[in-house]
Length: 433
Image (cartoon, rainbow, N blue to C red; front, side):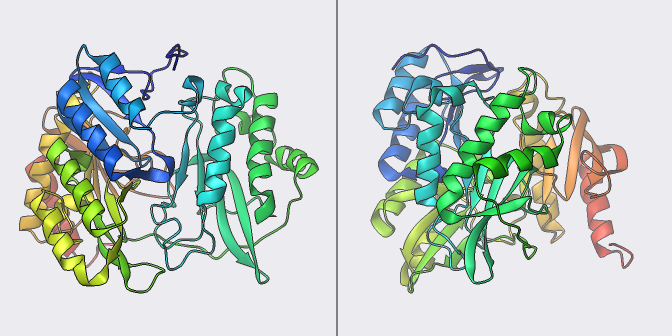
């Protein structure tokens, strides 16, 4: 496969991007899913050709960090495992996110995987779509209980029941918590995606790489009217949904007697032994697959419920976190100054310290540590954000829907110890909202 790719700052499987700690290779997973054999191939590549650091990303993909001079050998090993795109130019546009529990969720209205396969095939096979930005992204959910609802996408589609019929509601430049712009019957789902992509490419100027850029100038109503000329649209009203912590520990599947088990690699990082161990458990106790999630965690699906406790124990022995009351399972952090030139603090180390302090205080809080304003570790706004200002010091923000960015600035230039003390005091205050 030719690896002649357009310039981009986004890593891919075929494009290794350099960081302070070496090269980064991003492996895009179809629907977040990977076979046990493929997981072992990733572990082998990370150990042999890189620094042994594997990251679960907030788009349900994997990254290998610390790649040295053997870039070609690493890429070839991953391609041999079937982890590459259909065409080299198609790698950048494989940006389709599903619910991690697609096809097995008890609450789902639709198994989205066949439609997802259609969409991914079109994105990779049609040359005109290869001009899309490497960040242009689509989300598809089937109404599952486990679905990331807060990540913004250029196009989102969400299954909804309306007058006894299952439809796909959709929106542009937003997320599934937004008011839908309309809906289509299931048989028109693929046509809707193609129509949106075609219209975007027809209307957007070269510098307008994302849907939000186009909609800043082009009327949304006008775009929807043009869509209606290509695909039969319906009006729909959806019931608001929320997502919880269903990506941790065991949860019943649609099939009686089966559960999926969620486990969190500390701060989203796995080592080769951890990934190999999880792959072996998937092979021995599940269906031979693993699923990665937008919460930087992984699921082992199709585990017999009688074996759940044993599998959880084995995952914990590998170093994965399987308890929803574990503070570290709720803290995320970017690479920080240890691996990124833009990072102002060692966020990973600081996050470990903060999690230990929160655990000591009996606090389980969703906290995001960001080394700079780019917010690489989180595609959504966390309830609590620490923005680095210097080594070991952070500004503290609380999410506020009425404010842009990270939300309301609460305090400046705090140490990790001061952050933990403040959060503990705030959680115990009767005035805390």
